[in-house]
Amino acid sequence: MAPSVYNTSIPTKRVMKLVIDPAATALWDKAGSIDTLQGTIIKTPTTEEGWLAAEQEAATVVEGGNLILLPARVRKLNPKDEDWTKFANKMIELGLAEKAAVEAKDGQKMFDIGGRLYEEACTACHTKYLVPFLPKT
Ligand code: HEC
Image 1 (cartoon, rainbow, N blue to C red):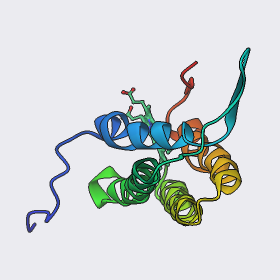
Image 2: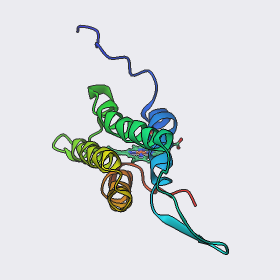
Image 3: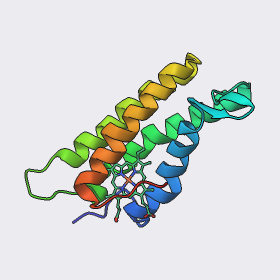
Image 4: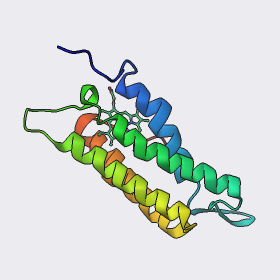
């Protein structure tokens, strides 16, 4: 067999921890608001640096989806199981929607799509392939 053109020596679990999770977490932290005793803090970026960081994070989520689609990383619970690919593609689709929301500087859309990313990509895949997945508290 010809050698693979990809080097997937970093395990999927580490790709999650080192590439995908930091980008997604930082992006989620740039949407929505928190209520404090001093009032409501809007977390949407207010500087060009902040917006650029958000776009970098969204792009990392998109490309992170591609990383887990590399053949050596795709998992199947049975030969007909295509859900891994489906969830990874959902992550790419919603990552691109996040990137568009960032480019439009639309904080509400970032918040809404961020929630969908968590539910429909991260949690959906973890529920099937990583049981039980306990989100960070
Ligand atoms: C296509 C499936 C899939 C998608 C989509 C996915 N994950 Fe994962 N994730 C996994 C699997 C499988 C593991 C466990 C890896 C293992 O045990 O080998 C994991 C593990 C993790 C871990 C634990 C790492 C550790 O060190 O224990 C974190 C954190 C994580 N994912 C975050 C995310 C976030 C955030 C997203 C969405 C932005 C996401 N994942 C999307 C499949 C997925």
